[in-house]
Image 1 (cartoon, one colour):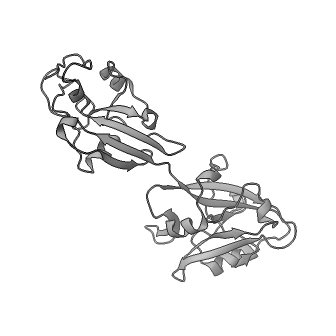
Image 2: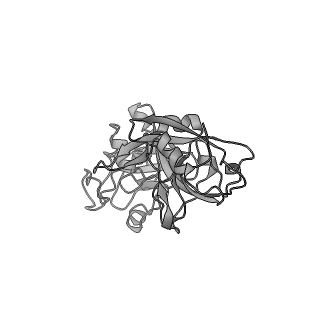
Length: 288
């Protein structure tokens, strides 16, 4: 149904809005299955959420001119319990006021606030009828500042884990997202990383892992492709792996903030490839 108004939710401080990339936005059909409503603990309010991991919410502010009546926005209510509702933009009419907004309004967006920060009207979680009533009460002669909430797809990292050939184990494939810790993500899938040939870096002798404290060096992985997909090394890790610039400690690495999908190939237990002395070991280590 076409509306001549819009909805609203709490505006962030004027200096904080992050303008999202249109390339990362979703279609209306995708958004319909990804948006959800969550009631806050005090039960007095609801908020829009992404129902699935791998998606984040971006805030977009836009100014819509008012050249004639109507905004030219079609809204769709995805669900309602009579008190709260989930309403998103279905489409924007070509040539309409909304089509001339300072930042594009996209299908799948949720309009969560109307007006400047000091005078904003919150409509996040309102039903369709409630939203129409709020939007219809606005001055039709003045431009409208809108705050949109938009779903963005997070970049994915396709991870291939390669194991020592002697074990005959097939490669394992994982999909990880920015911010995920490498060691924990791998262990959660039942894959053990502790290298039986590793000598503890902290003691200089013996084996056994330190429990993810970054002191034993037994969870080292060799990065054979996509090293840029991992977080930057801290000085301690860099010192421990000084002789192996393509190695990372799984307990100290996480997936970096990325702009696009990428591939990461990791060799588990890289010392085992060096049994015959083809690679150099860290101080205190010797091939078995």
